[in-house]
Amino acid sequence: MLGQRATCLSAIAGVSHGFFGRVGGTSPQPWSGLNTSFTVMDSPARVNENLARIRFQIGLAPKALIAPQQVHGCEIVEVNDDTPMDDVQADAVFTTKENIGIAVRTADCAPILMTDHDGSFVAAVHAGWRGAVADIMGVSVSAISSRLNVPASKMVAAIGPCIGAEQFQVGREVLDAANQLLPAEQFYVEQTEERGLFDLRAFIQKRLHDLGIAQVEQIPGCTYSDIETYFSHRKEQGNTGRQMSVIALCQAPEPVQEQMKLPEPII
Image (cartoon, rainbow, N blue to C red):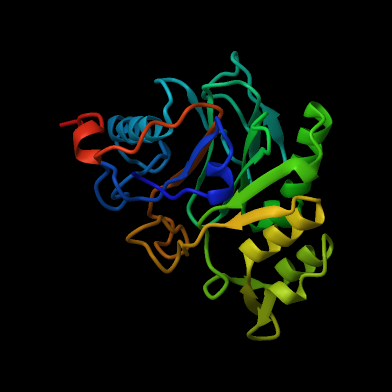
């Protein structure tokens, strides 16, 4: 099976999900593997093939996967049956509709997938440092809770692979911005007067806990340190692909032999 799964999400009946890296796709270098971005000069045919493989793993029909155009902001959009696949600008999406996959693309930023104990909704959130310190987490939880009357205490979340704390060097301004949301010194290791290492994943987890989500799982993997498995914009100096994290209210297929069941690659 391609991708990584979160125990807390896998335990919810009727929810299918996956944090997909670069393994198992058709794209050549420098996007080698399961690139899902149409904006990096990769062949559209190969990207579509990669997306088909992801849909297969989740249990989705063709044209049943929506990934927003991300802008490193705090906009969240509810996805319905009539939502256009290619015209959603946001950094978070959620839905209560079955058999619609929602997704975010990353290449060092943190993907967050969410649902609740009853599997009444699913959400996908893109959290780079800008979105995280601007509280995309709080905006998302508040919007979902208000719209669906689901308290944060009933939600569960998983933070996918992203750049690790030992590799994410940032300017002091990131710490200053993070401190506006919550005391962030515990997530920052000073290296010089102006720069330090920032633990993005732990910062996000703390904020989700503070919002009332008790069950927040961290999926292991550092995108920067393991470019055989993940795409890393910072490590590969921008010349790379994008991995995708997907969640849907649908029945996940039974585990299968990849070489027997995956769609035929494009020649």
